[in-house]
Length: 116
Image 1: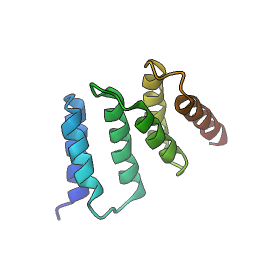
Image 2: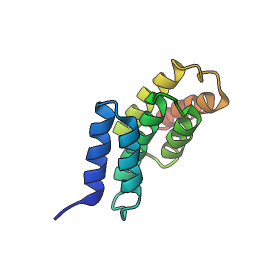
Image 3: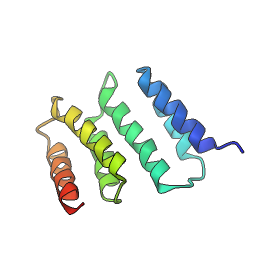
């Protein structure tokens, strides 16, 4: 049976790997229109979205940090927490590193790790 959401996740992941962030975001947008089956898949789709926001030519750091904070508040899997931590490190290396959003994300990430 064809799994449309998996198709869009795989497409977005592939485009992300190729540095085609606009196409990845288009695949994510299409995936968001599909009936969602699992929380984990939606979280992964949003992680890819956040990474695209960070890595695109005109980064959307605020959008990325908001997406990552939303995922953290939904009790993500260990893999997703590590993914968030990796993207957080990218945000720390950006010129957006001193923003309140990034600071709050770092605090939320530390609190989540402490609770786990």
